[in-house]
Image (tube, rainbow, N blue to C red; front, top):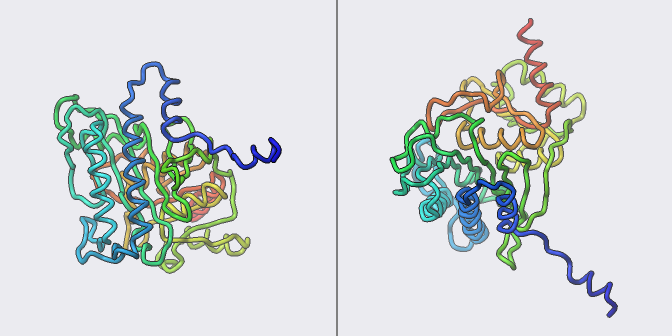
Length: 338
């Protein structure tokens, strides 16, 4: 076997998440490592959830648990498991002083008042799709606390607003498992390599196409949407754009970010404030969208400019390729003028 054949067999694996985080940290001379450790804690919990998702059908982890969360939504078994796994990882990691989760009503204290960060998390978004083997995900948002280190965290630590996020990301559990995150200097994605037990850098410095051909909206609510949304959807149909809606926010956002598209979950008659949660769904994805070169709005202003008032606050959400979001807003402008 010649040397070229040997080289072809020994395909380069790439940069591991740990090495990438270490390299990125070294570029900041005043970095002390806490945020890097925190990202590793989230990545570790993601590995565990990946394992649970993959064997859910074998050990009866799919389906509802028979009770509702604080949102009034039916909890799935994996919702509860994912929440426990992430809370344990963040508590034991030592970098986080408090957490808010979709699955809990108030602040979850980690008994580590010296931690410099707080985390807002949706442990398992789209979990109702587990039974049918559709992509689901974890969404997280990280803030540097504003309350004094050494004291219990306060509500103000979480109410800083989306512009104050120091990092945000998601883990997508699908045909492969991807960890996608940003610390404000671009977006990178890491694919989980099962045999090595490592996340490997697979998508460096991701960018969302300025325009796209995909629109993602729940067509079943079409008659309940505002006039400008219905008008925009009609124009998408007339132009022959592709309708793609998984019903899993992370999956829809990830696809549109790579291929170019717009995701819409607007206000409607039965949900005048929208359905998606601001702090642990829309803020982190809007942060990523802007880093990707896209846009995110509630239909009035950029998502990241919204002033939060409560942990489980909801908002309309329109996010994706810059040109497509602008076209949605232009449609609204036409209806306002009328």
